[in-house]
Structures are given as C-alpha cells and as structure tokens.
Image 1 (cartoon, rainbow, N blue to C red):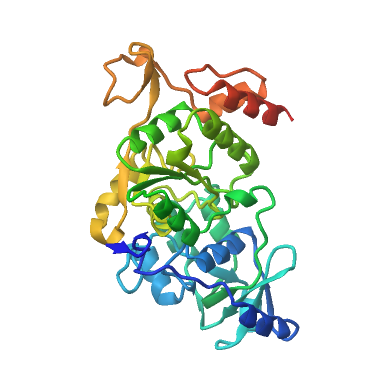
Image 2 (cartoon, rainbow, N blue to C red):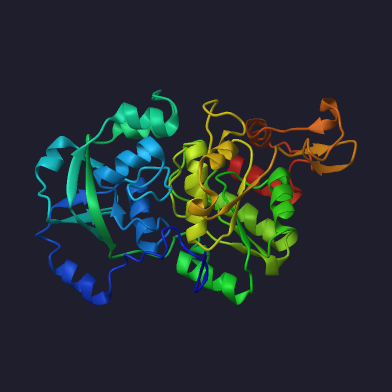
Length: 387
C-alpha cells in the first residue's frame, strides 16, 4: 500500500497530535485550573512519539479494549497489528481525584507543562498478566517487568496533545520526525528504505548486516534509540558520536540518513521487534533489519525468537518487510565478516566478541581487535569509558 509520501503509515495515515498555536494558547490559559500528572521519562517519550506520528495509529494512551487485545493477541481492538501496550499509569489515589471527560495537564519530569490528556477512561489492569504476556516472564529483575511493577495500579486513557517540545539538547540536527524523514526519502528518490534499530554502539557485525541490507534497497535509515535505557547501557551521546564517525568514514553519504528515535527502550525482545518495525514503517521505511536477540535482555528470549515472531503476523497487515540476519562474526579463513550462512569456517576460525567482553576491554583501555570494531570507534568508546 503506497501513500502520497511513500509507504502508508501504520493504520493508513500519519497521526499529528501537536497542538496548533491557537490550541496551545487555549490550553495554556487553563494551566492553573487543570489537575496535573507529572510524566516520567518513558511516558514523556511516549507522548512525543504519539504526537509526531511515530506511534500511528495511536492518538493517545490506550483505552481498555485496545490494551487488552494488545496484551492478549498483539493487535488493537480493530484488528491492526500492535505488540506493546502504550499506557499511562497512576496510583489509585491520583486516579480517584480525576474525572472521566475532563482535561488533565501533563508535565514533564522537570515540571514543564508539555501536554494535555482528554481523559476518556480510567481502568485497573493485571500487572502480572501484562508482564507474562508481553515480556514472557514475571521476574522483577527483568527491566521491563520492573517498570510495570513499579508503576501505578490504574491506567489513564484518552487522546493527547503535545504543547511544548524543545530541540533535543544533544542532537538537534538529528531530530527528524516521521513527516520529515518521509520527505527526505522522497527527495532522494528512495522507494525502498531499510531501518536499523540499536541501543548499542556500532560494531563490525552491525556494519556488515547494514551494508548487506543496503545492497538490496535504495537507502539505509540509521535510527538509534535515545530515550530511556538501562543504566549500564552505553550513553546515547557516545553511541551517536560512533555513528557520526562511521558516517564520515565508512558509509556512502548519499545512501544513509542518521536520525534519533526518541522512544524509550522496553527490552521486550520479540514483541519489541514488531513494535520497532511498526515505528520505522511510520517513519517511511519499507524494510527493517532484525538481527540476533533483537531488543533482548539477559537470557529471557531465544537467539532468533525476534525473527520467528514476524511469521505470526499477516505480512500485508504488518506492512513492513523484516530482513532477518544471522549472528555475524569475523571469519579468519575468508578474511572477512560473515555468518554461518556464508562462511565455511570451523568454530575456532570465527571471532565472536560479546558486548560485555568488549566493555570490559574498553574499561581497561584495551583496543578491541580491528575485526570487531573500527579503530576510530574503539578510540571514542575508550575515551568515554575512561572519562
């Protein structure tokens, strides 16, 4: 299904919930009269993603019908594929003070008035049921499950408006919203675009699968996630500098666009792979790279579960093509990056370096081998780790 600006957004059209200047003025005039909810980092990210159309067709935080079918069946109540609940949770006490049908003021963690919720519904939900269905575990040591257990017992639902959004403090020039990325793809004449999601610094295995994908499509959309992540993940500014180094030295400028994804990380493995694909479809991507243990954490998901889950969806309804890649390594026999699909090597001829092992080397100031990381990227990571 095509659209005036390329592939159709999920659900048919790109949502825009950014208040007009007149609407903003109207809401600001009521600022002191409205009940206030202070959003955490993740809810702030979700508000922004809904408003700019990254979460199309969502117009707000999910009502019960959508929430339940998403948790149970990975579809919205109207049958559109959707794999992760997008909800705003508050305590019983806060929920009791709010009335359905009224406006609620949404403040960011710093207390700035950034949005408005039209409260259409408030409802209780089963935290363990959500955890087990979405994350495949009820263990609180799973970072996604911990968020559910720590949040309020009542979900607030309804359409939202975004009133205020500053340029990203660290990456203003990479803050490219879906309407803009679609325009850029059109201007470059790209009819097929592959999206790449990461929360980690780029290494040679990433570069290899990105370039393999780029051989069969017109353009590559590098879209690192810069919303809330785990405390031990590499900071977003370091990851972005690594991408800039790669763009300057190792990628053809006219075939790659680098932009930030303001979403928060859920660590939901297979379900999050579907979610990430849908978001990139909204940004205008026709294809999406799914590698080893996409969006995984610990040992909660099988190595290729995030690839298999795509087979559970109607390809046309999902509307974006997954490009599935096996784990890449440096092959000593052929002298290049490869996977078990393309390399005849024995196990001992393959250089696999885990992210954990590399982080340990970097902390010690050791340069990872060139087979794992481009030297300029490794130098940047060492500087950051030791700083």
